Amino acid sequence: MEKPIISVVVPCYNEQETLPILYRELSRIAEAMEDYEFEYLFVNDGSKDQTFALLTRMAEADARVKYVSFSRNFGKEAALYAGLSNAKGDYVVTMDADMQDPPSLLPEMIEPVAKGLCDNVATRRVNRIGEPRIRSFFARLFYRLMRRLSKIEIADGARDYRLMNRAMVDSILAITEYNRFSKGIFTWVGYQTKWLEYENVQRSAGETKWSFWKLLHYSLDGLVSFSNVPITISSYLGLALTVVSFIAILFEIVRTLAFGDPVSGWPSLVCIITFIGGIQLFCMGIMGQYISKTYMEVKKRPHYIIRDTNCENAKRNN
Image (cartoon, helix red, strand yellow):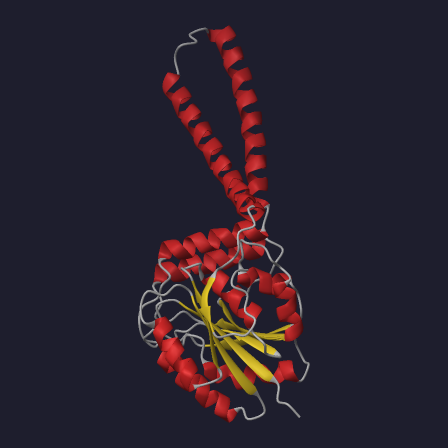
């Protein structure tokens, strides 16, 4: 009887320092999990260091190592999509290369999914020890906003580290939208999820590739992708300002007829015009975000382009 296969999908961008550490730990865990076969699928997202050379050497030494290398940097979401598209396993794990997603949790993650008790095991950090306070504050704020403004439930501290059965993976791949936000997609497809909590783990080596501004942009993408509330707010705001403006016009007419002196008050008039102009630009910016997402979708560009791979039957672009 053939053993079930676990595919471990790992997006990589300039991770030459962390990959050897991750590979050794995955190999150790795989040896302990004798009832399963493993496939390590590394997605090189246009790295500029020796990541690709390291992956090719690892693949030559270990048949379990598969790699997909992009023609340039397409982003983590594209890398996750490519990994899921090329994973052959009965179960699929998504995790980062920096060891902040501990491979030692895999035995605990596979057990309930293999027994049919749930469809996937997701992980979340219970604290953010070692993370800058300003970054932690905005991260928690983002999760609160997502829960209140969208119809999906994303747990505070949720990671992309999760183990899924094949049915859930196939459902995720059926969502072919260009503007992807995996944390939201994982929740949107449904299925029964078990949450596994763990203490925050520092990077094993190297530096994070996520700056504050990249995380902010990523958060805004997620909010726009799974909520229409921002554009609804802009509509209500426009309606409210219209009513206020109409009342102000009536007030000025009555005041002028009663007291004259229509010229005075120009400083307040300038402030009002500036305020309304700012609100208009703000609302146009919100609409622009949705229009830009639509623009990217209708162009039907591929999510990624593969330059090199050792995966059989891999699509060169998708």
